[in-house]
Length: 80
Figure 1: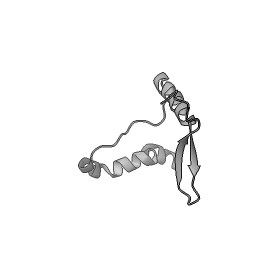
Figure 2: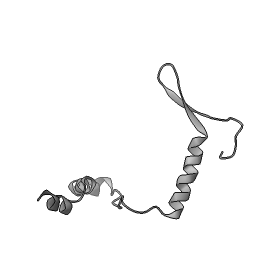
Figure 3: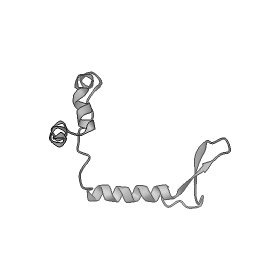
C-alpha cells in the first residue's frame, strides 16, 4: 500500500526539487542527475589520486579545540 505511492513520488530529493520548482526558476537550476550509478574508470582513478593526496596530511588539534592540517612528512614532495 505505502510502497506504491512512495515509488511514484520518488525519493526525498526528487520531491524537494519538484516542490521548489518556482524558486529554482528564480535562483537557477540544480543538478538532477541520478545518485545511483556505477563509477567510471576516470572517477575511480580520480578517487585513488584523492585518497593518496589525503594520506600525506594529518590533522592537529590545538588545546583551544581548533584544528589545522600539517604534512605528515615535510620532506615528501611526491604529490605537491
